[in-house]
Length: 220
Image 1 (cartoon, rainbow, N blue to C red):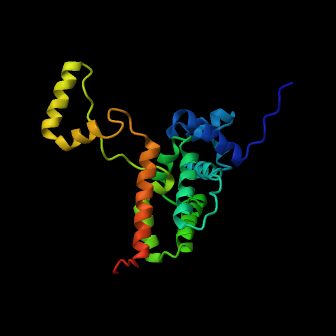
Image 2: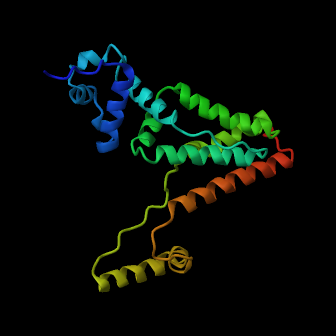
């Protein structure tokens, strides 16, 4: 006797889509692919999600719901930092989440709740609505635990002689870049993404706190 198939519901649909996206990327979690993985027709999914856009929204909210609560702290910077790092830890295990966040046309409830919690921590620290507004813009995608690298590095030839010649050429044209790349601690090694992220986040939060203490206003 065959084992009866578990009843289909929204949670099963979303979890199946997340499993596909985790394995092969967001594009792989199409309505047809999700239906195939569940052994149903694509039309069966529409009883639980209106379309693929809603499916991606549900996937994102499902993942964000697993983010642990940040430890309480009286310091607004610590509260904001802890929440962002907790979100970073949650989303980094789902490589597709970044694309999902950047392509959403509407904010999901969990997305709004995350943003609201960050702002609430800032307000609790005494920051003005003016400064909170600008701080959220400054955080941008960093509030989700990621940022874009705007410093693409040219690829060097594998041949040692050609590589040496290329570096010499860059040194003549771009001496400051080569100085940084060859003399900074860890030169020649891949950047530590966590260290770089923490540095930028702390720089932003410390800067916002300095403006708050100085009574900054936008002048609007």
